[in-house]
Amino acid sequence: MHHCTNCGDDIETADVRYERRVPDTDAIERFCSVGCLTDVDDLDEAAVRDRLFSTSQEV
Image (cartoon, rainbow, N blue to C red; front, side, top):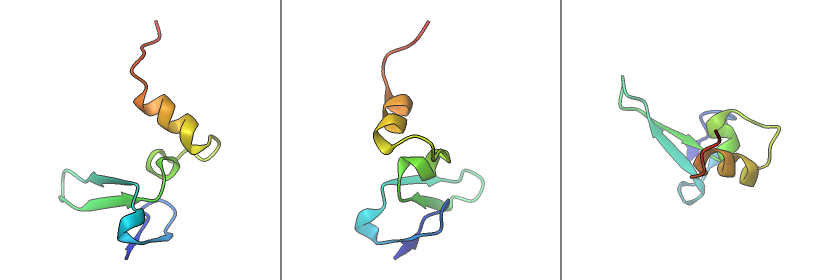
C-alpha cells in the first residue's frame, strides 16, 4: 500500500499511475493520477496527459 504524494489517497501498488524519484534524496513519490502528478485538477486525465506527452510543438 502506498499514498499519493499529492492528494494523500491510499493507492494499491497495482494502481500507482506515476512515480517520480526525488533527486536529492532518491525517495520515490507516487501519484494516483496525472492530475496529482502535475497538481492540476481543472482538466480531466486525458487532457492533462495529452498536454504533457504531446509530440507536436506549437510555434
